[in-house]
Image (tube, rainbow, N blue to C red):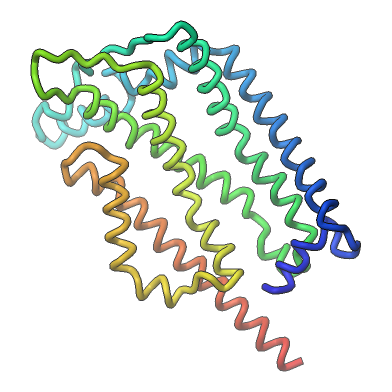
Length: 286
């Protein structure tokens, strides 16, 4: 892995002697191109504001949202009662500043642009790192863009269709007194939806992060296996934090996919460790 780090520091071209400034200049242009793509997607999201807000962002506020309908169907099919059927989400969204709606329009458009442009951002980062890898490392790393993008989008969908509607329904309908009416500000609602959705997308990148940590020797399968209990505790703690609903089934619904990701990460780390061991044996035997 030291070869990887040395090449990474040196240049975009492993056969050249680029200075540190040249290296930063190369990275800057990769990030500029990624930013232009993200901005382009943001402009598209800004133009189609009806879809962005009425369909996507305000979707979890609608009792006819896909998640609520499926929960109701599940409750009916297995005779779980009518509690899973949501007829009304009892809060209104309000704007209390002059430029509030315009500012939130910009913020939501950029968030949409970032989500849609994330795969291209990974691609540009990969183009920057790839020349610093040895030929064998490039072959092993093939597919990282695909898997990184897929895991991110899976996390976004999981956060949007599972975590966000449960949080919106619980927090928006929670009352401590009938004398209080829930009037949620636009920025508060958007922050809740965006943070829960984006955070879940980033959390789902855990196997990719573990892959690179394993390459650097920071993460090992032995260490991860020996700390399963701690990891399980942290996963349930995270599930309790990102799901305001206090019921155990909801937290399990979030914790189980996260734990599966952890187990996949152990397999990824074990594969990297096995490959590094085989390469060392080949090196010393040659």
